[in-house]
Amino acid sequence: MSKPLSAQIDFAKRYLTKDSTFTAASAIQRLEELIEDIRDVTKVLQPVLNERFVPSFFEFTSYYKVGFVTCLEWHAKSRLYDMFCFDPKTIRSDDLKQATSNEKLISMIAEGLTIPHLLAGSMSISTKDSYIAAMDRVLSAIGAQKSHMSSILKKDKNGTTVGQVLEELYIYRNDLVHEIGLQTIGHQNIRDYTSFEEALDVGERVLGMILALENVLTNAAPVEFPNKLDHSGIPISEVDVLNKLIASMENKIEESVSADQDEILPLEAWQDEVSMNRTMRDKELQFIDSINIAGSRYYDTRPYIQAMLLKQRIQYLTLLSEQLL
Image (tube, rainbow, N blue to C red; front, side, top):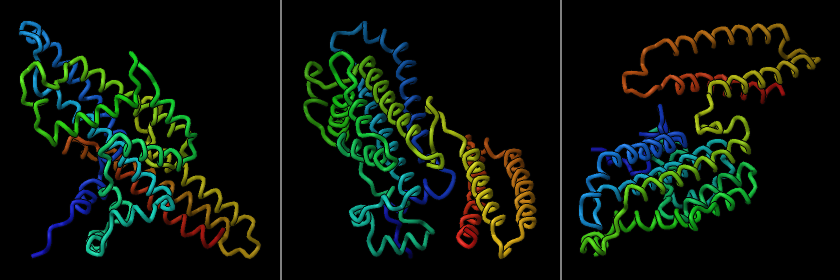
């Protein structure tokens, strides 16, 4: 009987080797859904609370904050993974010590995983400081100015900064999830509870912070950095980005072939290859668009499949470039 997979290996298998929700866009979408849920529930249940003695609250309202922290963790971990994949040189020895062991490495190889896969599953984003450190690391890696993070965290509303909101949110969430004290089972008058208004405010401020960080990343990161978002938080089509990268790589090879006096590769032969591949690639992309797989799990996996097709072409062009350029 085989040993069960470690938590990190299992995480990587579930989220990082096929159609994946392990992206910043997923964190934003989930956060937006929680905020919208608060708005909907408030309309129905706030009138009920208004008729009760004060203080009056519902227990479940506090758990929106648990969801907010999950979104923060997902955001930071997914961006670290993107960074590791885009530039493996950003991986530190401490990352490897924390994430790997002989047993995990054996499992990783057996499951067809990579080091970035394993690192993503082992990262801990359980405090405000660890979240900020993770995002600061990503932004620094793409050359963003340090002042951006500082200005976002210092943004003030009613005397409370975004940094303070994060600090209080993580502390509250950790207490709620891991402890049972008078703040959770004491008399109503001494309970730590969350009103609908507070939950909505915290959610909106967390969302605003994530979108602000993503705007910094969008402006600073190279075009080919994975899973980039536009300024509204909507994913930029990876297919468009990869097609542009393919065209750029093909043009560089053509320039090299044109200048090659030894004629290792005839220019006409290369141009024919590019034309033929482009025609077939367009047909493949159209075919993937036409198949009705989006509704089978109510999650459209076609962009992921199209991206994998294009990445195969990029891998081939990379190998060819090493020989010709």
